[in-house]
View 1 (cartoon, rainbow, N blue to C red):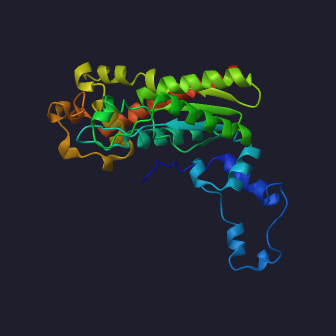
View 2: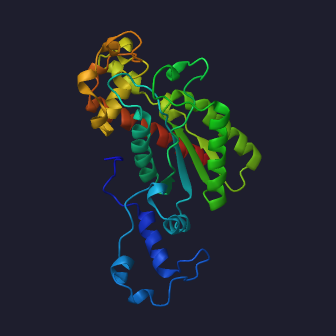
Amino acid sequence: MRRSVLPILPALLVAAASLAACGGNGPNGADESPANESTAPNATASQSRPPPNTVFIEELTWTEIRDALAAGATTVIIPTAGTEQNGPHMVMGKHRYIIEAASDRIARELGNALVAPTVTYVPEGDIDPPSGHMRYPGSITLPNEFFVKLLEYAARSFRVHGFTDIVLIGDSGGNQAGMEEVAAALNEEWGGEGAIVHFIGDYYANNGYREWLMEQGESAEAIGRHAGITDTSLLLHVEPRHIRLDQRAPGGGFEGSGVSGDPTRANAEYGRMGMDLRVNAALRQIRAAMGAS
């Protein structure tokens, strides 16, 4: 299962379906359907189909997005992840699976938000000579100047379409400075006209997860800084099939494994609490930012 889907259909999508039923299908609200469309096979079934239970833009049509905007879904979350090594026990797409599960929850809790495609090409180290995660096969890096430009034009695109609050949130440490830079630059340029960009750093750096793990008796050494207890537990919670359980070992099991910490101490319950803490930290910061904007 690629994404966690909550069983509650967002009210805005229900409202969007009602708007679509009352209006036309063309870009300007005019009905551009063939005159005999109502007599086509399955036309009635198609028209009565319930709106999709998703907040992901990739899983919606442009008309569904148009109608969601008209119904008040004017917040868009742009999640950033990465493609990097995570030791012998955890897949390269760890950050994407975690941030998509978190973004799904955040959007549904906000009630007026959609989620953009996840950015998986991010700064991961230098090419020549290879540094950081680029020392490991499969990692992909994008210099920060290009990462910033990618985010900038994603935000500009959503502003054109009528999104008024653009949320930047990332699951990787190397993404944070670039997101903050984009938010500051665009907010200065736009001056609050049309849209505001919100950099939500508390999700990653001010969520209390490490502190909570230490309260459970885990040491800072066991928690680690990369592919240890925190990351492994989060992925065990959202996508356990992407953990090679038999490959977990303290410190990855060998020098140069790419692991900092002890992933054998990770578990799905730790991951559930970690996800709750991250999502709640993000929601608090988003609501505070929007209340002040």
